[in-house]
Image (cartoon, rainbow, N blue to C red; front, side, top):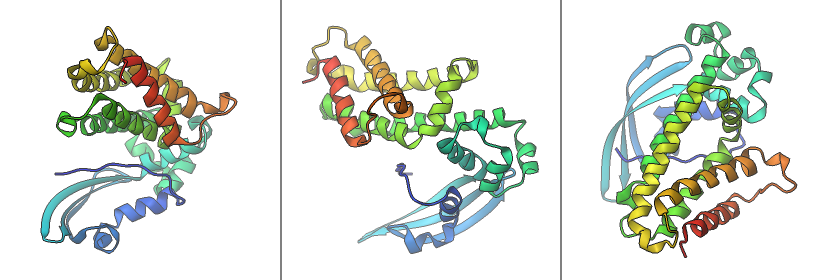
Amino acid sequence: MPQFTTRRRVRHSAADMFDLVADVERYPEFVPLCKALKVRERSPSGEGTETIVADMTVSFKLVRESFRSRVTLDRILDAAEQVLDEKAFGEATLAEIMERAGVTVGAFYRRFLDKDALLHHLDERFFAELHRRADVVLDPERWSGAPAREIVAEFIAQAVDVYYTRRGLLRSLFLRARTDLVLQQSAMKVNEHFIDKLRTLLLPRRAEMTHTNPHRAVELGFMMVVGALRELVVFGEIWPAPPTDMPALAAEISRMYCGYLGIS
């Protein structure tokens, strides 16, 4: 089934946005191209979680397609991530998170052992999203015939978007990664996946690079990108003038990566 993923900051609460997404029966009223939707099944899959199976018909001019989709809605994880956008996780109470999620503290303990377990679930969900994003953004079929500079530019644009829209969660990840061995292993697997995908796309285009060791340079350049985004976006408050124009930042970091690889 075709997929599209994006994230944007909006002036609405997490609860309001969750309710909007969960109101699947009304999708034909506000989702572009959605002409019909029928819910086949609703099933609780744990406290604060619901799985919906629905058939949706998408239509544009003479094209009309139907898809069956399975959506899992998790209020607890969404509410916890919203809290991380506002404060350190240690400063937030479970009561505050559960109030935003619309479930009881008792429901939380029926699903999670403690707050650390909740954080690990957040980590796992985030890393799974990153893995899928790498597969979509760096899909070789998408870039057939494209120059290396365009591939780098799109990768950087996606990376800046993730670091900006998930800043709170990433701050928590970076602070805990120094001592959490499980988190270190999960992060390493995601980094390896991105590096492998970048090498698959860029090394066949080595004629466009002047670096003498492009295999190693792809990895080191990736590390430079992550370091720059961590410092400028996640922990930008320690710098005199942290960037506020994310498209401009993406262009500069893309120029940095391409310059290191020797892509003109």
